[in-house]
Amino acid sequence: MKNIAVIGAGTMGNGIAHVFAQFGYRVNLIDVSQASLDKAIATIGKNLDRQLAKEAITESEKQNTLSNLTSFTSLVEGVKGVDLVVEAATENIDLKLQIFKELDAATGENVILATNTSSISITKIAAVTNRPDKVIGMHFMNPVPVMKLIEIIRGYSTSDEVTNLIMEISKKLDKVPVEVNDYPGFVANRILMPMINEAIYTLYEGVAGVEEIDTVMKLGMAHPMGPLQLADFIGLDVCLAILRVLHEGFGNPKYAPCPLLVNMVTAGKKGIKSGEGFYTWTHGTKDLIISPNFLK
Image (cartoon, rainbow, N blue to C red; front, side, top):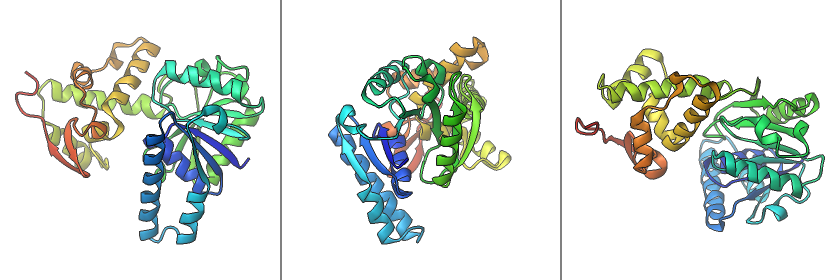
């Protein structure tokens, strides 16, 4: 298995393509936007330069990685001859179901179809294909070239053979795969998102400010970044989408998204991707944007 297709050229998609290409896989990166593909390849180049500056890779390894990447705006063309597809499109159930219907029609029956979804049911995605035994979750963490974990999520029908193969491929990427079962939020986001939501409620209820909440969690709980900064990093729209999946999936009010999060996303404040969330973001720096009037 050496030919991979990655669907989606955003932050996760370009990171997944980067890692597969760096470890010798031939990668077809697919997106409907040529501009997004060009930006993704440029981002991969910059990230490789950072690795080169840290002497984590050689110039030859950088060039080999880039040579393993090919971009496509056509899904049908991009998946020709591949052995594995990893979908990393926007966290939207309708979009993902449509993509998997198209992938099922455009790829050979033995091709494994994986999704990088962080919360959507693998079983539900698999149900729109004619190969539910070959559909699996590969939930990479951001930033993909740095973070070691991959959650490997088995759908109801995912076969042992496919699960074992994806576990082995993940190890070849120098990652640590952890097998989990298909329930809302899996493990990572079932635990993480309620914590982030509670931090937003703590702000919403006026218990403390943004920096104070994040400082307590960083210095008191040894977290590398506070939950509100992490929410900005993940994307507030993504956090909201995952919380809605948890709320709908479990029917428990404890997963209901905080009204402040809903309002911020509605207002277009999505974190780093929009330049403004709980913090303002400019060239990697952050300045507080929450004032006492923010919640009025």
